[in-house]
Figure 1 (cartoon, rainbow, N blue to C red):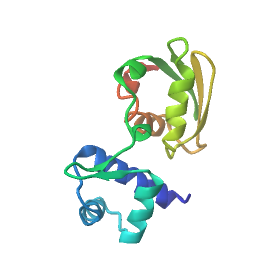
Figure 2: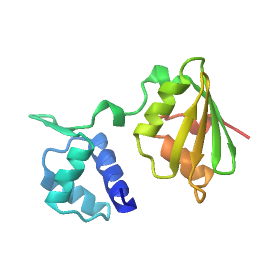
Figure 3: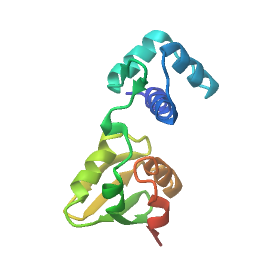
Length: 151
């Protein structure tokens, strides 16, 4: 998947999560306002790839795998510590695999992948990713992550 596709699809997720969207035309307009041009055919493919469905009266709905962690799981992330573009996340015992799976499912641009144990996750960022990039990318799924940074 090209970077432009990932950027567009991330923007689609953010737009739909921010408030109701009832049509592809409305979605295309909001994308254009965000500086991203897209055709109707491309939007259809993106919505299909992201498994976003349309519910009558509610508009487009983001699947669970693209939603933020539940409060219980998010609060299970205790701290994050960086070493260049690598990060170690400490979780409550038994939660590391679930948190890592959610991070990996997001296809977050500055994050290449994760390796999880019982209570520890090794997060590998792209070589050019800054700590701020990684924290910004994690914030939608772990809202308080910036408060859990250990220096």
